[in-house]
Image (cartoon, rainbow, N blue to C red; front, side, top):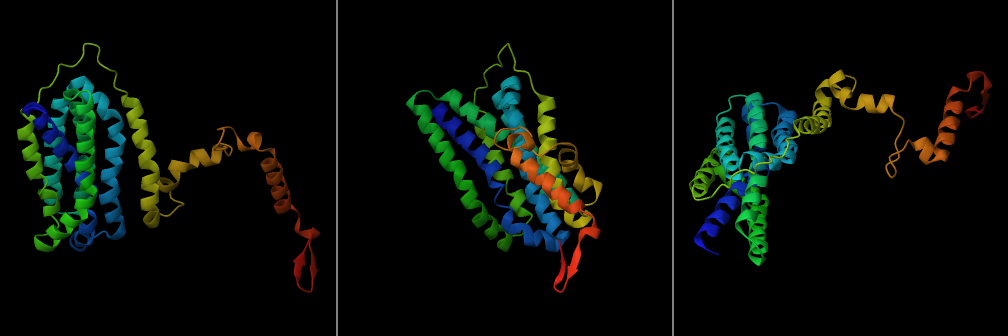
Length: 281
C-alpha cells in the first residue's frame, strides 16, 4: 500500500464513520433533548427516524450522483453539508428545527457512503482491494459500537448539543485528507438519474413512518394517518405474498371462507333463538 492509497483509505473510512456514527450516538442523548426541547416520544422518534429515513431514501440515488458529478466532488459536498447540518442540530432552539436539521443530515450523509466506497474500489485492485474493503467495513462498523459509549460520555461531561458539534472534528480531518484524492473525470456517457424513482421511493418510506409516529397524536382516523395505506387497503383485493396475485385466485379456500364469514355476519337477527344461556343460531 503506497502513500496515496493510504490517504484514500483514511479519507473514506472517516467519511463513512461519521455517517454511521450519527445513527447510534444520538440514542443516549434523547432524554436530555426531550428535557430541554420538549415534545416527548414523538420528538425522539423523529430525531432518530428522520435521519434514517432521508439517509435510506437518497442512498439509492447517491451512487448515480457520484458517478455523474465526480466521486470526490460529491464526497466533499456531502461532508460540508453534513457539517453544516450538524452545527444546525447543535444550535437548534426548538425540537422542530432539530428535526429539520436531522433530515438534512440524512440527505447529506447519504452522499458519503456510496462515494467513499466507490473511491476506495477505484484506488485498489486485486487482493489489495479486498483487504481495503475489509478494513473499511471493520472501521465503519465500529461506529455502531462506539456511538452509545461516546455519546454517553459527551452528554454527561459536556452536554447533548456537543453530540452533534463534535462531528466537525472528523469532518475537518476528512476534508484535509480528501485534498490528496484524485477525482477521475466523469465518463462521457453519464448515467441517467432516476429522480422520479427516488422521489417515489422516499414517499413510500415516509408515508408509513409518518403514520406510525403521528397516529398517537392525530389518531388512526385522521387523513394524514390513513392516506399512506387507505388506497391499497380499500381499493385493491388482498394480495398473496408468495405469488403477487389476488388472494382469491391464489387460494380459492380464502374466497369461500370470506363468503361464509360475510353470510354469517349478514344473517338476519330474526333467525336467532334465545336459550337459557344466551342467543344461539
